[in-house]
Length: 232
Ligand SMILES: Nc1ncnc2c1ncn2[C@@H]1O[C@H](COP(=O)(O)OP(=O)(O)OP(=O)(O)O)[C@@H](O)[C@H]1O
Image (cartoon, rainbow, N blue to C red):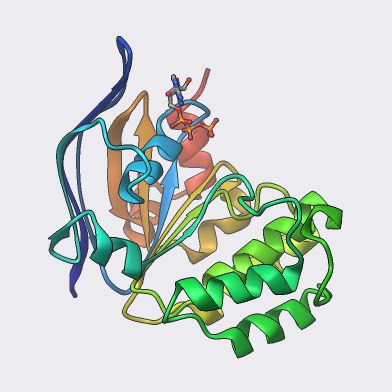
């Protein structure tokens, strides 16, 4: 197993508000990891830092043994929590953009995923529904042969029937030696694919465990454990 993400003593504040508090994590290859926590617990902030989008933090981050930078950008395939395409773009423009930006992008795979999703070529992205946009973006992100996939709420906007399809896309398309970090609130729908679970509570990691061991130890589902931990 290769350590692909190492986070040491990570702290981040917005003004006076501390939103990430002394985070330490080591994430290794071959795992699908659930980053779980209630609204405002810091999931998106952590994900943005890993993707080099927020720079004013304290602590050390190593991606594939190297500090954040050109190398980390080249090996992380990132699905943001909001669609990032420009209004004028068509599905084909976005496909070509990914082809230009990422050497590891497999356009044949993306086209076949689009076909399975009934997303046509040359359609204006702004004319797709929210769920279709999310599926399209996921198809592009999962068509890279990346070492690290970071997916912020990949099933948030799609209907329950489409969720299993999305999980299938994730499971069938990540390389076995990659790490997949997925943030979500919809734990019951997705927990079966997690190898490890991280609970983030008020900016702190309160649990990081193998999901099977956790279920066996507590004799219940991750969803139930989450509800218990974060009871209002
Ligand atoms: N740009 C910002 N300026 C100030 N505070 C922010 C900013 N972005 C996030 N925060 C605050 O940081 C905290 C963590 O937010 P973050 O979006 O990382 O949480 P989250 O776990 O992803 O939440 P959600 O599940 O609702 O998306 C929250 O208290 C939020 O209000």
